[in-house]
Length: 166
Image 1 (cartoon, rainbow, N blue to C red):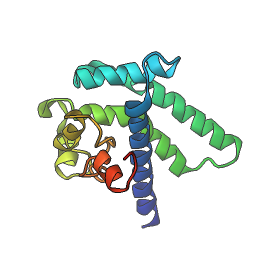
Image 2: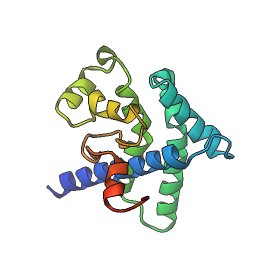
Image 3: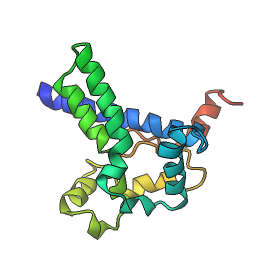
Image 4: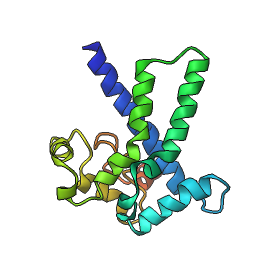
Protein backbone atom coordinates (compact mmCIF):
# COMPACT_ATOMS: atom_id res chain seq x y z
CA UNK A 1 0.00 0.00 0.00
CA UNK A 2 2.86 2.39 0.83
CA UNK A 3 4.43 1.84 -2.60
CA UNK A 4 1.15 2.71 -4.35
CA UNK A 5 0.80 5.84 -2.22
CA UNK A 6 4.40 6.81 -3.04
CA UNK A 7 3.73 6.36 -6.77
CA UNK A 8 0.62 8.54 -6.61
CA UNK A 9 2.49 11.23 -4.67
CA UNK A 10 5.36 11.16 -7.18
CA UNK A 11 2.91 11.57 -10.07
CA UNK A 12 1.26 14.51 -8.33
CA UNK A 13 4.68 16.05 -7.60
CA UNK A 14 5.64 15.77 -11.29
CA UNK A 15 2.26 17.20 -12.25
CA UNK A 16 2.72 20.17 -9.91
CA UNK A 17 6.35 20.77 -10.90
CA UNK A 18 5.70 20.56 -14.63
CA UNK A 19 2.63 22.79 -14.29
CA UNK A 20 4.67 25.34 -12.35
CA UNK A 21 7.39 25.34 -15.02
CA UNK A 22 4.73 25.61 -17.74
CA UNK A 23 3.17 28.61 -15.97
CA UNK A 24 6.59 30.26 -15.60
CA UNK A 25 7.43 29.82 -19.29
CA UNK A 26 4.00 31.05 -20.43
CA UNK A 27 3.99 34.00 -18.04
CA UNK A 28 7.59 35.14 -18.01
CA UNK A 29 9.60 33.39 -20.73
CA UNK A 30 10.95 35.50 -23.58
CA UNK A 31 12.17 34.07 -26.90
CA UNK A 32 15.21 36.39 -27.00
CA UNK A 33 16.63 35.06 -23.70
CA UNK A 34 19.85 33.09 -24.06
CA UNK A 35 19.42 29.30 -23.80
CA UNK A 36 15.86 29.19 -22.37
CA UNK A 37 14.51 31.44 -25.12
CA UNK A 38 15.66 29.20 -27.94
CA UNK A 39 15.12 25.83 -26.26
CA UNK A 40 12.00 26.45 -24.15
CA UNK A 41 10.13 29.71 -24.80
CA UNK A 42 10.23 29.82 -28.62
CA UNK A 43 8.96 26.22 -29.04
CA UNK A 44 6.28 26.92 -26.42
CA UNK A 45 5.12 30.04 -28.29
CA UNK A 46 4.99 28.04 -31.53
CA UNK A 47 2.93 25.40 -29.72
CA UNK A 48 0.41 28.05 -28.67
CA UNK A 49 0.12 29.36 -32.24
CA UNK A 50 -0.07 25.88 -33.78
CA UNK A 51 -0.96 23.41 -31.00
CA UNK A 52 -0.49 20.24 -33.04
CA UNK A 53 2.85 21.26 -34.60
CA UNK A 54 4.90 19.61 -31.89
CA UNK A 55 3.22 16.24 -32.43
CA UNK A 56 5.62 15.77 -35.35
CA UNK A 57 8.64 16.00 -33.02
CA UNK A 58 10.44 12.81 -32.08
CA UNK A 59 10.38 11.67 -28.49
CA UNK A 60 14.01 12.77 -28.11
CA UNK A 61 13.35 16.25 -29.46
CA UNK A 62 10.36 16.65 -27.15
CA UNK A 63 12.21 15.29 -24.13
CA UNK A 64 15.68 16.82 -24.64
CA UNK A 65 15.38 19.74 -22.20
CA UNK A 66 13.55 17.57 -19.66
CA UNK A 67 16.26 14.91 -19.91
CA UNK A 68 18.94 17.51 -19.14
CA UNK A 69 16.97 18.80 -16.15
CA UNK A 70 16.36 15.22 -15.01
CA UNK A 71 20.04 14.36 -15.39
CA UNK A 72 21.02 17.31 -13.22
CA UNK A 73 18.47 16.26 -10.58
CA UNK A 74 19.66 12.62 -10.56
CA UNK A 75 23.33 13.61 -10.47
CA UNK A 76 22.73 16.10 -7.66
CA UNK A 77 20.73 13.56 -5.65
CA UNK A 78 23.44 10.95 -6.17
CA UNK A 79 26.14 13.39 -5.05
CA UNK A 80 24.38 14.09 -1.76
CA UNK A 81 23.29 10.48 -1.18
CA UNK A 82 19.57 11.14 -1.74
CA UNK A 83 18.99 9.03 -4.85
CA UNK A 84 15.83 6.95 -4.32
CA UNK A 85 13.49 4.99 -6.53
CA UNK A 86 10.89 7.73 -5.99
CA UNK A 87 13.27 10.35 -7.36
CA UNK A 88 14.11 8.14 -10.34
CA UNK A 89 10.39 7.68 -11.01
CA UNK A 90 9.88 11.45 -10.71
CA UNK A 91 12.59 12.06 -13.32
CA UNK A 92 11.32 9.28 -15.62
CA UNK A 93 7.77 10.64 -15.62
CA UNK A 94 8.99 14.23 -15.84
CA UNK A 95 11.18 13.41 -18.85
CA UNK A 96 8.04 12.11 -20.58
CA UNK A 97 5.75 15.03 -19.69
CA UNK A 98 5.92 16.51 -23.19
CA UNK A 99 5.18 13.13 -24.75
CA UNK A 100 2.12 12.72 -22.50
CA UNK A 101 1.15 16.29 -23.38
CA UNK A 102 1.49 15.47 -27.09
CA UNK A 103 -1.14 12.74 -26.82
CA UNK A 104 -3.80 15.39 -26.20
CA UNK A 105 -2.97 17.01 -29.54
CA UNK A 106 -3.16 13.81 -31.57
CA UNK A 107 -6.38 12.55 -33.12
CA UNK A 108 -7.93 9.92 -30.86
CA UNK A 109 -7.16 7.14 -33.35
CA UNK A 110 -3.42 7.99 -33.27
CA UNK A 111 -3.07 7.89 -29.47
CA UNK A 112 -3.11 4.12 -29.09
CA UNK A 113 -5.62 1.99 -27.25
CA UNK A 114 -3.85 2.08 -23.89
CA UNK A 115 -3.55 5.88 -23.87
CA UNK A 116 -7.20 6.29 -24.89
CA UNK A 117 -8.28 3.81 -22.19
CA UNK A 118 -6.26 5.69 -19.54
CA UNK A 119 -7.71 9.02 -20.71
CA UNK A 120 -11.25 7.60 -20.72
CA UNK A 121 -10.66 6.33 -17.17
CA UNK A 122 -9.38 9.84 -16.23
CA UNK A 123 -5.99 8.44 -15.17
CA UNK A 124 -4.31 10.59 -17.84
CA UNK A 125 -5.44 14.06 -18.76
CA UNK A 126 -8.18 14.19 -21.37
CA UNK A 127 -7.86 16.21 -24.55
CA UNK A 128 -11.02 18.16 -23.65
CA UNK A 129 -9.57 19.13 -20.27
CA UNK A 130 -6.23 20.14 -21.78
CA UNK A 131 -7.99 22.11 -24.50
CA UNK A 132 -8.98 24.67 -21.88
CA UNK A 133 -5.34 25.82 -21.83
CA UNK A 134 -5.44 26.65 -25.52
CA UNK A 135 -8.39 29.05 -25.48
CA UNK A 136 -8.59 32.69 -24.53
CA UNK A 137 -5.60 34.09 -22.66
CA UNK A 138 -4.03 30.67 -22.12
CA UNK A 139 -3.80 31.46 -18.43
CA UNK A 140 -5.21 28.28 -16.96
CA UNK A 141 -4.75 24.49 -17.05
CA UNK A 142 -0.94 24.42 -17.07
CA UNK A 143 -0.64 20.86 -15.73
CA UNK A 144 -0.61 18.34 -18.59
CA UNK A 145 -0.44 14.88 -17.04
CA UNK A 146 -3.80 14.51 -15.27
CA UNK A 147 -6.98 16.49 -14.73
CA UNK A 148 -6.38 16.62 -10.97
CA UNK A 149 -4.35 19.77 -10.28
CA UNK A 150 -5.80 22.20 -12.80
CA UNK A 151 -8.19 24.70 -11.36
CA UNK A 152 -11.60 25.02 -12.94
CA UNK A 153 -11.37 28.77 -12.39
CA UNK A 154 -9.04 31.04 -14.29
CA UNK A 155 -5.99 31.91 -12.23
CA UNK A 156 -6.55 35.65 -12.69
CA UNK A 157 -9.98 35.32 -11.11
CA UNK A 158 -8.50 33.47 -8.14
CA UNK A 159 -5.72 36.05 -7.79
CA UNK A 160 -8.21 38.92 -8.06
CA UNK A 161 -10.35 37.43 -5.31
CA UNK A 162 -7.23 37.11 -3.16
CA UNK A 163 -6.44 40.78 -3.79
CA UNK A 164 -3.30 40.04 -5.81
CA UNK A 165 -2.65 42.22 -8.83
CA UNK A 166 -5.48 44.66 -8.13
